Image (cartoon, rainbow, N blue to C red; front, side, top):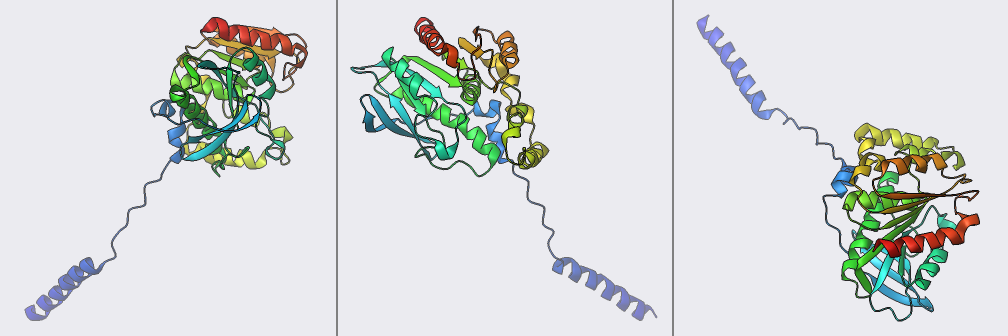
Amino acid sequence: MRFWLGLALGVAVGGGVAWWWMRPEETKPAAKEYPLLKYTIENLGRRIYGSEIVLDQEESDGVYRFHFDSDGKDVTGLAHIPGGCGKCPVIVQFRGYQEVEKYKSGGGTRRTAQEFAKAGFISLAPDFLGYGGSASPSANVWEARFETYTTALNLLSAISNWPLADFDRVGIWGHSNGGHIALAVLEITGKNYPTVLWAPVTAPFPYSVLYYTDDIEDHGKLLRKKLADFERDYDAESYSVQNYLDLITAPILLQQGTADDQVPAKWNQGLAKKLKNVEYVEYSGADHNLSLSWNRAMQDAVDFFKKSW
């Protein structure tokens, strides 16, 4: 009896040992990656930017196509350079929304760039990814948005080694969404770039995007789905320029039309109260492009840059 009991016990133990050695190895689930974390305002402020401005063909007298590298992607743009410029002040211009199909290099900045050139300033206006002759942006709608920040930051960094630039006199001009990009740049860099904002989009993210979805064919249904996916993994507050305004030290001229039907005046009335070093100017009856007061607004911008350097 003892023999049979010992045999059975031995078989059981042996089988257990054999099963332990032959069992399939447990695999741990792969750690989830969060590729968009690098685009939070704080994380963008921790990295280093760099590029080189290359002038291409001259389109017309003093107007050149140019290109630069932004994180491995080629970005084109339009430069206006005053005649006889040795080392001139530089205004980096960030345009507002443009339809890709209708866009031509310099769209949204060409007219103001001409006036800056008359005042003795170089204008550098990037097309941004997906526009002009630039490379394609990320297929991820949110990363493509954040790439506008890195594009702007790489271009600004390139000015420091550009022979035509007066490094001590660099300013920023931004209109509409370009104004939003300008605010992000000021927060990320903390640098003292004198900045002119024409009717900037300044609602908190992601409302700043959702506000404009009425004009989309599906009224923003797909975008809201993508936003839900984004907010499942990320804290939208870490990407909103409204939460980092205290990082801005640069002087700002904030210009707003009272008849603007794209950016409510109350947005920028509120913004003016939160910024440390801002001059707020309203133009009565002016639209989103400050059309009725364009000459005055342009002169105000030129005067602001001259007194800020």
